[in-house]
Length: 340
Image 1: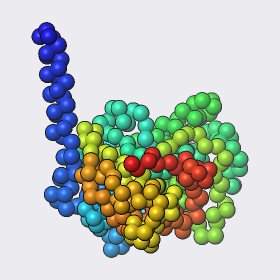
Image 2: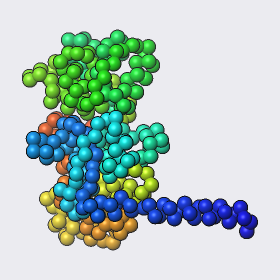
Image 3: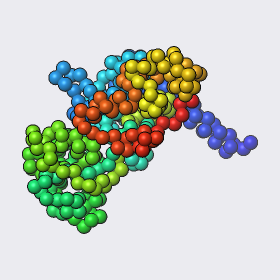
Image 4: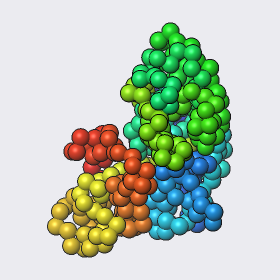
C-alpha cells in the first residue's frame, strides 16, 4: 500500500472519528442541564405565543414539548427562546438554542450554506395574498403597483419579488420585522396587500381583522410557492438530528394508528397490532441508537397527544383546515417512514 493510500485512509478515519466524537453532544448537554432550549417565534397565534404569565402555547411549542418528553421524560422541561426572523439561524448556529421550531421554510440554500439540518416537514404551506374587498382585486395578477406588507429575511420576501417580476408587475414593499407588526400595518390600511404563508393569512384574517369584518378581507386564489415548514438543528450531530426527526415521525405514526393522549398507556399494554406495539416500545425497537428508552413514544404521546391532537388544540380554534396536512391515506402529504 502506497503512502498516498495510507494518507487517504488516515484522513477518512480521522474524519469518521471526529464525527463520532461530536455525535451525541447536544443530547448530552440537554441531559446535563435538564432542560431543552427551543427557539420559537416571538408571537404568532396558532404556532407560538405566550400569555401574561409567560406560559407558551402553539403548534411549534408542542413540537418542542414532545422533544423534551422524549429526552427528559417531562414536557415542561423546556426553555422557550423567542427569536426574531433575522436572528433565528444565528441563534441555532451559535448554540444558543438546541432546536429551531419556528414556522421556518426548508430550502436548499439554508441547509447547504447555513450549517443547518432540517429534520422533517411538520406543516405543508404556500404563499398567498390577502386584500381588502374594497381594493377590488380578484387575482394576484391584478396587484400591479400595490403597496405590499412583508417581513424581511424570509422566503416570503424573495417569493413576492420573483412573482411580481415574472408577471411584469411592480410593487412597493412595506417592511416590518414581526408578524404582529406586519398584520397590524395591513389592517390599519397602511398597505394594500399582505403576503405570507396562506395559513398565516387565514389566522391573521380571523384574529386581527376588525370585529365582525372578516368577510371584508379576501385571500386571493393564487398560491405562488411551496413552503414546507420544518424544525432545524445544527449540522454535525447525527444522533440529535435523528432523535428530533423520529420524534416528529412518532407523532404522525401515532395519529395513523389511533394512538392518542388518552389511550396510549392502555394501547402500550394491550394492543395486538405489531406496528402499534413496535411504536410504543412493547416490541424490540431501535430506541437505543437514539439514546432513549423503549417507552419514549409513550411519554411523548402522553405529554402532547398525536399530530391530530396537536393540530386541533392549536389551529382548531382558529378555523384552520388541514388540507395538505392530512395523513397520506386521507388525501394529504403527511407520511412517516416505518418506525422499525
